[in-house]
Image (cartoon, rainbow, N blue to C red):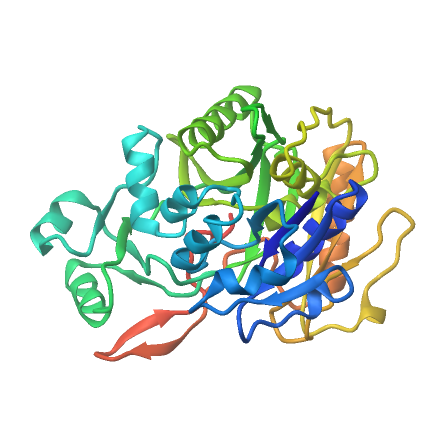
Length: 393
């Protein structure tokens, strides 16, 4: 069995390592100028020619399936590759989840709860009638870790911002006053079997995930079941094969779905622990036609991201954890690696996690909201580079 992974970042790296442990060989499909250092020595790298992607596969005719490490991929390239090799998750699922307006429409059609929203194509009067201010404005396909997002306090500000974003219709949604953010990671195999991981609570700093804990301490068994139902509904509707992540806001009035990630997810890196079947292994199992693993989670698990700039010898050592490095260029605010933790109780885990965060980021108030505004949009509105709806508690 040979799986081609489209993308060459840290998620591809960890998928490849999981594949090797299962006896599945891998290769990587890279865009013309893509950095491949994360996956060096893990498999052959094939540079895809967007004008003739099928020709790029001529030397590797033994590929049995293609999967992706990110959602932002040219679908026309995937469609041509799909003529030769099956792709998981299916292209139709990627088409709906790589575009925020299509994603919101999917959630609405399935009666899954999300924030009130409209497209910027509607008249200002419709925006005013449909939404309460302030609002968040998001580019439909761009943006990661809070990028390509803006906020507006009034209708006039909203119209001003959207008038400058003329390349495409954008998403406008109410900014949610939430208590905390969670995610649920789930997998579906080619036989229709579904496995869900415990709900994860996530903390962000400057819009970048900094730490996670699972099971989420404040999530009840009923809420876990509700989120499993949301994830299962999406997996079945999309005829999905592989791992999917649903990011949500927990509010006083219930849980709202924020975004869907059709892939393995940073908030699931804690699954790379001894004794667990990781999200990466589940994904490869699904893609390769194997059965998923149903398992229990006897401990409390945590994650701390390592953000650049940092040197490896600066990371504190502990017999209970070992940093995982991605082999990426050491740049500010870049995810260079992570540390997975475990403990018998939530109290122990949080004590260990907070101590580690204090060592890694002594100048940061990790568990508080933080915004950073420094770039002006033409017309004098401020782009909040740090803005995301994930502002922490």
